[in-house]
Image 1 (cartoon, protein in one colour):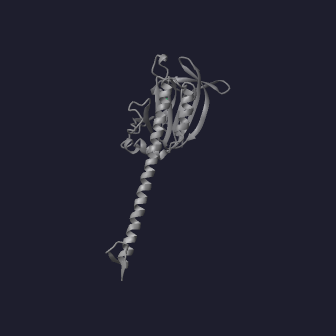
Image 2: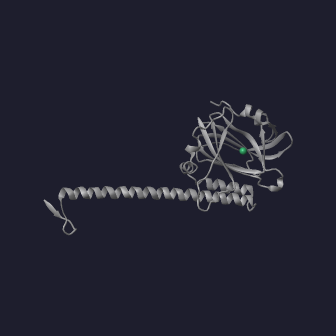
Image 3: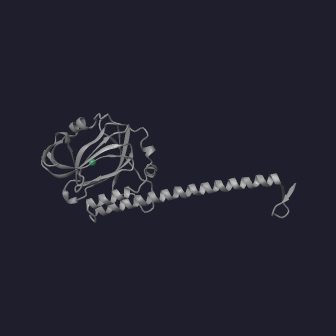
Length: 265
Ligand SMILES: [Fe+2]
């Protein structure tokens, strides 16, 4: 049997007609899938690009002292809270970064992160970007900071996270009070500055863990030093007032030996 199709002078069989129609349907749905996928990829890219530009603007505002460090912390934590872990992993090319990653026996190893080229994002962004990787029971040892800020987004794994506010110091001790004691997971965000949650301490609970860090040094150029870090010994801290502790400062080697690897399980 032959069917007349709406093209003058062209005749095809019913079977040819059905096959052609099915093939067209398949092509249309394949095309729709491709369009949807591209739109989705486009929207993820747009979202991630937008996030990176906003991040850089916040960091520029801090560097020009248009906002205080504690305001930067509130804003950056809110912004990072909107970023999907899977999007960030793709954006920084995490797989490539962690290929042949060397995990130290004590403490952490780091790798610098490069953002892809984005319209509106200058090449000389206002912050340093790094991933920190470590194995279970290793730690970013307890330490306080001077003249710098940093924000931390958990990419993989779980950490025990402790923060302290720094209330004062002398040559040998920091005076601290606990502010955060929690477990953080992928997508969790934290930050430090001279004003808030100055001291932090991450202990890896999972087999492998990775936070992504954004750091700005020399927040106040009049400070006279780009930044400084004091490792401390919370286990030897003495409570001098209710919930206020005087913790000894430690040199890096001693601190790493004591806190770089602690078995918790
Ligand atoms: Fe730190």
